[in-house]
Length: 256
Image (cartoon, rainbow, N blue to C red; front, side):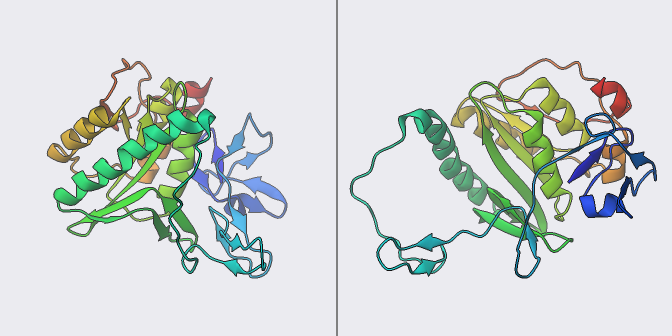
């Protein structure tokens, strides 16, 4: 994925490639210097055999005794009665595990049909992974949960946006634990992503519950979100939703 700074267009690199040059399909300007004119957002994996692209590679389990290869779907699940947790990852594991169950339970009680984890095929034919896909009355909400020791950064927002722009949805929600950085907040508004911040399950569920009470009339179009950016001055409120707003500053000014 490539993001063109001057016009805000984000699209697949193949759509920028014109006879060996990078030309923006939106504004038709040439992208020359990475980091100045553009940058790459997210990664895609392409199969060496069939050429199919995916945002995540295929996962296979190989038996250490006989060499049999199994997929997660046909592998036999056996409960381990003893295991050890990587202490360096304990806090991150506990923060994520403590959110999934209560969040799924809450959405199901609200009437949503839940798929978690979800793998959704986009308009491009690429299959994208999401932590939760929740659907009600024909409207799909896509959710991802991201954690960091200090704050979730803009790369996580841009990677999430790159997936959601290819998949039809009503709302895209990125949950940042314990908080999001200021740049992540700016980009979430620019690309119409609902950003939920919270240190724990109670803060996050309270924000999601508030979101259910007051929904937007309709999300801004991709063109509107790409062309404009909001006023970056925003107080940091823990456990509160950062709502998409109408943007007025050019992208290049916000990034300078």
